[in-house]
Length: 232
Image 1: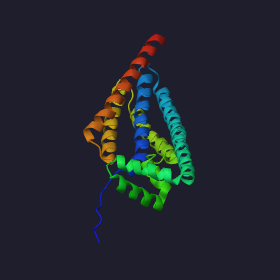
Image 2: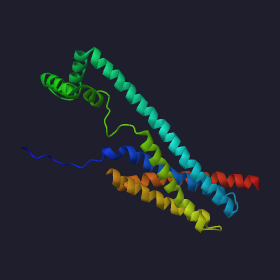
Image 3: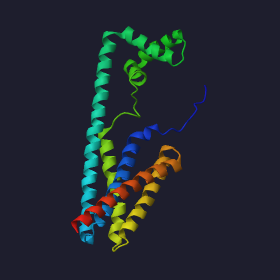
């Protein structure tokens, strides 16, 4: 009996990892940008904290609702495709078998072998074979709305709490610099963590997250400063 070759892949993490990274990144960027933008208009420290807390709560709920709705829409589409495929398998099994064989032949199998593979796979799990090879659906990549919503909300709250914590500790004219610098460091750490978890290049992941976060904070600070000058 041949020994099974074990490999470690990370595709099973895609569902929750995407939602968690998006939530944490959005939490850091949006809260830091909100704090920096409002601070540029010279409010009181208490007003700044209230704004930050409100942004954390609203952002977490918004992320949860948005992820749930969007991922649930994806799940509904997947289920509709599976229902249609199930009906086609029942009505035209031979045509569906030929379709599956054509897919395998296009991937490099000889036509005769492609037919044999299609016959055997459909005998084992016809719907599963078509879902995987015709529709591109798999268990690891399947939409999970509740998981995505909870991951996004929790990670957003954690991400938002980081710049908010700096805001609570720092007062005075140096607040904007502290929040901006700390948030950039948080974003770089998030990029490294996400890259390591997903098995991607660390430097590229950290740079990508940090650059766009810093740009968002710079734009928001400029808008806040401009409105503060106008209001003043």
